[in-house]
Length: 118
Picture (cartoon, rainbow, N blue to C red):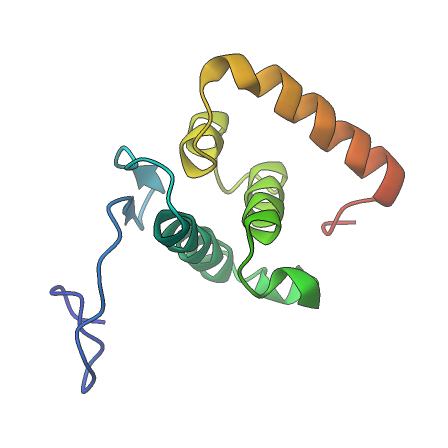
């Protein structure tokens, strides 16, 4: 992809409003939650996992976009150490007061089902 949001030799693709600095995974503030924005966030998290060369650990059901797979990829990236909690909150459109509920839910899921890293 060139710097203008075009795949080389292909059509222009829309650039998501949440973008990452690929060197350190810093995020620009997201826009309000829409299906398009969720999809953009999914692709951002996917790109982070690909850059870390860990995409092969992602189960097949999470390799296709859905709101659930967005959360699963964000959870994976967080527990793998690829992103921090502030990035989790932005990617999932959550505020700080939802952090505790989210972590409790994730730890319970990992205890019950295991994790992709294991």
